[in-house]
Image (cartoon, rainbow, N blue to C red; front, side, top):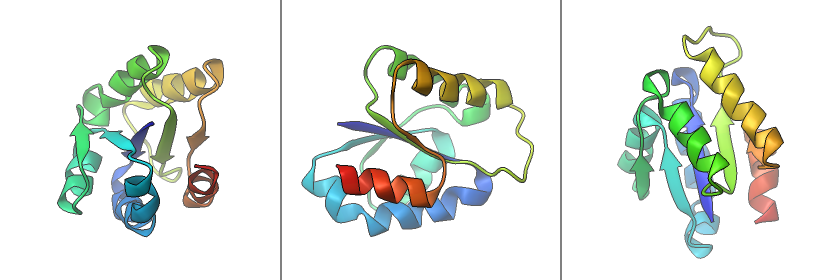
Length: 120
């Protein structure tokens, strides 16, 4: 199973905390993580193996969307910061739309992400 992880700047620490809290599930199920740039760096610094793509504003969201459309992503955990503006909003909306088109589970907050982890 491949899970894509993305976190806006104000949510990166929360993402790392979430991953640490779910480390046993991620390791037991042999889950592959892919991430946008800085989220991937922070995840790697926390001791996780992760494939790092471009930063979101530089095309990382679009790279994940491409993999999703190719059937190479099984779930997305995207901790969005709804209180901030993001220059790459069109890419974010495209990614979310493709999750709906391809019926891919998408968590945009820790509560939903926890439910998805329990389902694994």
